[in-house]
Image (cartoon, rainbow, N blue to C red):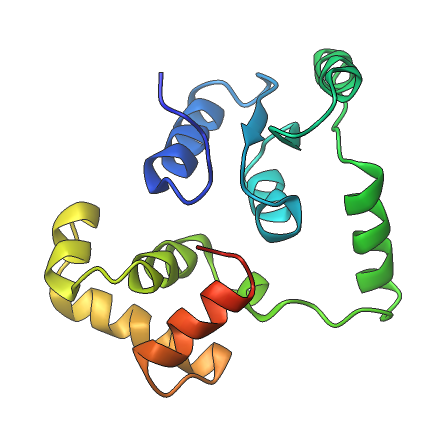
Amino acid sequence: MQDLALPDIEGLDLLRRIKNHNPDLPVLVLSFYPEDQYAVRVLKEGASGYLTKESVPNDLIHAIRKAAGGGRYISATLAESLASSITGEKERRSQESLSSREFQIFFMIATVKSVKEMANELSLARTTITSYRIRIFDKLRFKTNADLIRYAVENRIV
């Protein structure tokens, strides 16, 4: 079984496949990546909850019970962050505006993969990768890969 850690692109794809085959199956994602960067994305993809590996055992037990009962689990910290973004108190993080595929390519660029590597890994044409890159740069107002990498590091995405 693959780890569902978000930057592991196959993990997000695995979550999608699980939800496509069995949409009612509750899936909790346990990751070492910060929830402020990845939780909303996995919840949008159908996960029943997101916990970091630093979560206390009581949180894990609560999340399992919540998901098994048909609910969704989010931490109090994430709930507060979401409430703040809804009320306009906190500006939405730019990378949240990216589609799932754009985020995959964003992450691959941030980890310094070449267009050829991305195309091979995602089974896409190089021109398609380039089109996604242009869209990402437009949405996030980057001029160079260095801008994207700096942003990813500063925001703890990589």
